[in-house]
Image (cartoon, rainbow, N blue to C red):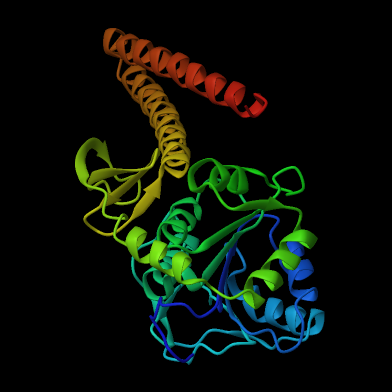
Length: 327
């Protein structure tokens, strides 16, 4: 695209879209409403598309008039085309080009929505329209906030319509988007914004706000659930974001989810270790029985009984947790 990185006037000509669970159908609906000759480039991250990315490209090519491709590193970013993040790589906008990265996961995802949105905000400022669709947890909240701080426009699918409302709800809470709309109305708003000229006041506002995304980090008392490294935390207008030295980044809802997973994994590991301790103690008891050492055999049986009771307590706790309704 020409005039890459400029934020003086012009128009909104970069659309970044992010979604997770339940986002494929609304994405297809949105793409169907875009006209031929759409004067903006579109970059998309959908968690879980995985190796289905090429199948998704085929679907979107059938759904609407805009050509859709899985992004290649170094390819040019052209108006009127849709670029999908490939499996296992972050998609970034770098000047007039697309870049792919194998950097650490962000919010346990690669590609991650935040990575795409931040790169778009840094490069294109107020020319960016950020769109968050259905999904779980909170990837995309910090990215949409970065778009808004750079003077860009934030749009979010109405959580009441989304199959998985958590991602849109988090984006609404922390990024304060300009509009929250059903998908059909989102498509119309995107088309309107792309046709609308950016005023000088809007561009200047974007330049002033672009430098605000420099929130100070502080060392937290927590460790990274992915690599066990120390975590630094920063507060993005109420959205806490954690980062380790490796480069893993987790926003607060993802961090809570990961800690819950770590606790469950630890409890299952403890239950398994206790059951193995019970089995070993019983075998030793039998061995000492055959040798006529009743006292030692009795001690091992007591140890086996204690381990069995503890393992049963842990398993009962885990099974009860599995059956509790989601909050």
